[in-house]
Length: 405
Image (cartoon, rainbow, N blue to C red; front, top):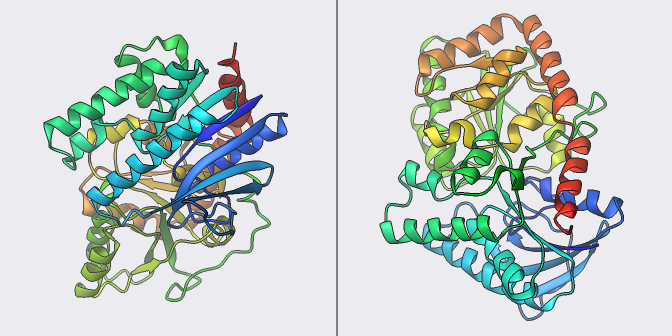
């Protein structure tokens, strides 16, 4: 079958962004299907295309995937108005592709929520089977975070959410809370399945050469965060813990933040003004470099702002990378991941907005590294037993292609 796949922030493993869509598209190709990936230009991402844009787009074949890339450069550091404009431009250009291309199934994945628009047009104007994948619940998340307060915008987003869910023949949620959120909008549960983010077990293997950045000694405890430095991530919690560790004179604990985002400059300024030599900022890196950094780390930090909608409504890539690498995980909010960490004894769970507890957990980890090894083995076992990307990709392919029936 021919699958038309929309993901605005698509990246291959050569980029410094999530590669779920790459892995799923590759699994479709390996299963004998043809895939056309429609995307934009994502900061930190890498589509694999390097030719010139013509009339605002370029295309080519990358690892068996036909890619159509629009000349729409997006960054997490962009302001709300610019990002919204890029989302709408991508949606409108994607509608044209959905109306003109030859394909059997259309698939769209968030974020942003506007990714569902070409699928809606494909369903109602061309009668194509449409599968919609939901990575975050919108507008619930921005509403709870206070990022969007305008009732008109929230109302329009809610309408688009409803239209996307009800236009889709099938939906995919990346977490239990997302599946429940889709069902609450009136979608029959028989049309929804859970396919969380998975673990790339071969990428994060024991064969990877470990490394540590400048400023981290071999006997230091190194805790890392790898992801967007945005409002949703609540990375001030790291600096709060770092200040507490500084008061305790724990110079042997280093907190490494890898990534980019609109809050990064402010975080760096705050760290500098508080003379936090125990916090180290690194630029985004591709998966190979990241695997080496994780191999050299002692602990992965799974952090989010204290927003109840996050508790069961997110499926963060970084958590699955951590457990793939056999890293214990320090989590700072309740929910399904916290429950999983506690049940499998593969890390630490601390309450939100509690720098003392955050620092206590880091000290406990630093003082009992042998126990960290046991936790890391438990984390890897969890990855292998429950979140092997290959097994999840097979389930995903069966669900998507089953929509054609």
